[in-house]
Structures are given as C-alpha cells and as structure tokens.
Image (cartoon, rainbow over all chains, first blue to last red; front, side, top):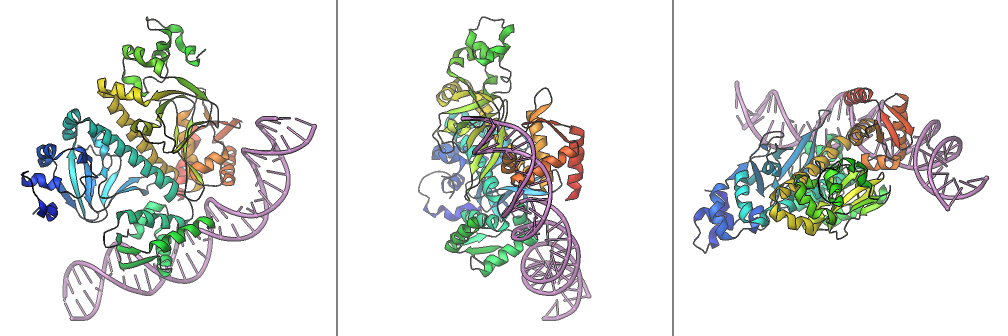
Length: 246
Length: 246
DNA sequence: CGAAAACTTGATTAGCATCAAACCAGGTGG
DNA sequence: CCACCTGGTTTGATGCTAATCAAGTTTTCG
C-alpha cells in the first residue's frame, strides 16, 4: 500500500516490514537519517510517517508553529515568502534528499510557505524524535548543521545567479537548476510561467516569451506543458553567449 | 593595549585581565559564547584572539580552507560572491553580534569572501575550541544552529526585499537595513555607490541618482560621504508610496 | 599640488513591464 | 458529444525604468 514498497523486492534481512521502508528508501543515503544504521532505523521508522501531497498543496505555512521537518523523497517543493509590497517570491526549491522546515527543530515557527510543485512524497520528522536521537547520535547534529549550511549556499546561489543579469540569463540559469531535479528519462519539471516569474523576479509575459524563444532555438522541448526535455549542450552554449551579452 | 579594555573600568571580580575582555564585551550577550558562564570564559578567552580590520581588508576568502569563525564585535562586514558571469554580488551584511564563517566549523572552505566595510573588530573562534566545548556545553550547538537559521532568514530577506521591486524601493529597503547597524549618535554607515550597486543589483549611476534624489527629498543627510543620518519617518513614508507605485 | 578614484549629472537607448487581445486545454453541464 | 466556461499561456503594441555612454565634479592620497 505504501508507495515505498515498490523497491523492496530485494529485502533480505529480518527487519520488520515498515523498517524496510526506510532501509530501502532511495534517498536514505542522502537523507538526514542516512547516518543511522539499520538497527537504529528499526526503532524509529514507525515514528516517521510518510506523506504525499498533490501540486499546489501546502506542506506547511510561514509563521505556523511547526513540530516537524520534512525530508523530500520524491518530487519538487517550493519555499516562498511574501514581501512587504504584497508580492510573493519563491526563495528556494527542494528535491529528493533535501530537508525543509528545519527551523521547527529549534522550536521556531516556519520561515516560509512550503508548497508542492509536483506530486510529492515526504517523510515527516518530528522534533522530539530528533531531540531524543541527537543525544545518542552526535553525528546527527553535525549532519543537521551541514544541511543548514547547504541551504545557505543554495540561498546565496539564488542571489548571485538567479536574481541578477538579463532576464534571458536568469531563465537559462533556472533551467540549469531544474536539471538537477531531472527524472531518469531526461524529463524535467517545468514550472508554470507564474512560478518562473516568482523565482526570477520577472513577469509571466516575459517568462513566456523567453521559454518560447528557447523552444524555437532548440534549447528546450516541451512534450507536455509541465515537462521539458533540455538540450544540455545548447543550454550551456546559450549561457555562454548570454554571459558575454552583458 | 587591546581595544576592548576601554570598557573594563568597572571590573569587580577576580577573573584575570584577559578574561575581563570577554566578560565586559558589549556584544557578549549577543555572541556565540554568550551562553557560557564567566567561569567557562575564564578558560577559553586566551584562545579567542581579537582582531581588527580596516575597510577593504579581507577577513577570509571564498574557497579558502578556514579553521575559524568570527564574531563581529564592532563595524560592518560584507559577504560577497562572484557569479558565473564574472560579476560580484554582496549577499549579506554582518554587524555587531553576528557570527560569520560558520562553515569553517564543519571543516568546509569558506562559502564567500568576507571584507570589512568599516573599521572592524572581531573575535576569532577556532574550530577546535568549539569542538571541545560542544561536548560539555550542548547549548552551544543549539546556539550555532539558531545562528545558521538566522543567516538563512537574512538571505531570504535579501531575496524578497532587496532583489525585487523598483530600484527606488530596493534602495529604501537597503537604507532601512543599514539603520540596523546604526551608531548611537544616529549616524549609519553609508556604503559606496559601487557597494550599493552590488547589493541591489543596479549600476553605480542608478545608485548615485537615487541617493541624490533621497537627499533632495530630505530622507537622507550625509554629513560625511561615508555616513548618513536617516529621517526615519520620511523613510517609512517613502517606502509606503514606493510600495503603491508598483 | 597633481593624479587617480569615486561620485554626480546628463543624453540616449535597450530591455522589460504593462496593457490588451487572442489562443488553448481541461473540465462542467446541458 | 458538444457548447461553454475558466485559467493558464502566448503574442503583439506601447511606455517607462534603469543601463549605457559620456562628461564633469569632488574627494582622496601620494
């Protein structure tokens, strides 16, 4: 029933069925609890519910008092914030292996809205669980800190690569970033024009024009409105010329 | 000799002279080691050298293998990153009480260049010191994590408030942010036009024009090229109308 | 004092926002 | 099944904002 079982055919040890969910999980090595051994997982898996969200559904809301962080197992989640002028800006994207809502682990309210961009599967990590484990597993705190630093790097990258330069440059950089979340079949999730605008600080119209232009240039192909196939060589070439341009 | 002594006249306990440096430090309650008691400080102060930097001097460089974080005690430090197009962008400012270069505590290289904007006084916190202390003082790790989260919030604020909207709006927001680092006499550090441009993603010329306009409007006064006196009511009013504008 | 750097101001232009109108896909109800 | 509506997308025409190019002016510093 639980979607994770789809990879569990090769189960070999005596861990109970639910623990296999964690052990077999495709992102475990990437995830927060990746540092734990199977025996430790055995004791906690039942306290880490896995959840699913459909596109547009909120995982959590800014300023809400949260008690859990989330490990993204599948799909893409966006973190967005309102600004003082009433607009909204997407400040980060999270994909498989990423941990979001870490601030809940500090007893703080969530700093941003988290919304599913695609169908999403996540594991919910309650704060109390982390508190308990961190005593016995000091590795875990270190891993948490690394994740904070990674999130910070990510934020800085948005500032340096996705917030300055010509609209065309920023769009190309976004496509490059989206390729990180690509499916094995070469398809990448293509955000709505609205979402693109909110990530890159431009209007829907401009985003649409740029995507159309890139399609004409063969950088991009859209078998489906919400999916794209990127021609990476063409993309890299376009980036190179866009860099000269300004 | 050491500048910190300037506040130590009221020393009352038997801690040695150097320990008083920390105990009396104006930002101790804000700083990382603020959670430590005086007795603990006694044992570590001599391993926390205090340093000074002049405007333009680097505290550390991106990608350099660092062994220390820094607590800013006085002045303003900017963190900047090069982008793929060869430009540079200032991604954050750090003032008294802020901790920068935390990534060194994880054994990572620095993620950005840190440069003094004003005369700066900092305390250098070696990684080994934190490693030792964190065993006995679990509070410390928690405090570190809070600081990471705070840095992340800060980065998100730059994305939402300083990277989108009209040039005028962004400049006004920058002035508001700079007021956080204001001196007791009401003066705030005014960045060079170049620096403003690098923070707000605009050219020097545009930055200059906007500052000039705000001076004419009485939002701003510049007794000295590098300092400003802000008329907060006028600033807030200008922000309000700039928000309507777009 | 003179040179270099930073800042200011003006004129022109390019790029993107804005306004407006089609276009298209997916869903609903007759 | 089709007509219709709705929300997202695309495309076009126009205007404004900020970049660019180009002098000046002021400040800094050797």
